[in-house]
Image 1 (cartoon, rainbow, N blue to C red):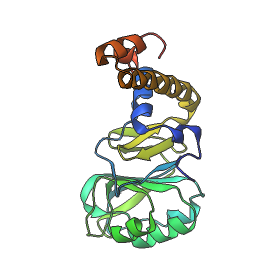
Image 2 (image 1 turned 45 degrees about the horizontal axis):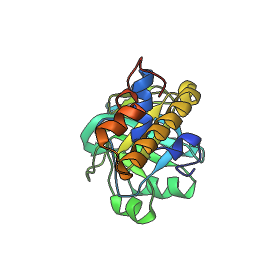
Image 3 (image 1 turned 45 degrees about the vertical axis):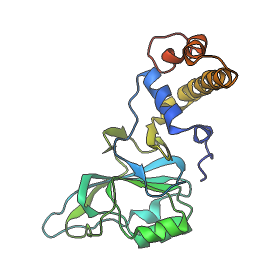
Length: 219
């Protein structure tokens, strides 16, 4: 799935975040950043949750066989930075099967392959140490938490240079027109200032300060 495969993928994460703010819906994934410049993703969430490994340790996951083309793999490793849950084998397999990208509440490794192949990964960083015998899969297809945001299976994930936002699937049709109106307002402000209008006047004319505010006039 390309970043624009869903209409919300046409918008920046900043615009979507403003729309979510206006609707009073949390969805910005704090501390989750693209692995390389130009990375973008858009797709519905396939969720996996990890916990510290038991004794004997369980698997780190054979879930990728069940991910459909166009879905985004979302891995909740509780924000751990000391061991990874994604590496080059998973990158190669996901890229080959048309997975839209990977979002990790934690770190990844073997990043040269993802960067070289242009496979979009958004994570809290990179670190070489394996998660095997350190973490194990606790649940596939349940609610997860990444970057402080709750993500349900099937929610829409959009990622770009600014990070990742998660939109509850049931609200996608409500978020979309708000994004459209925000872009129209911001485009008006940009045209005004480039035509010589003062920034304060342009912002006032197009209601800049109300764009993401709950309870304001229609964005």
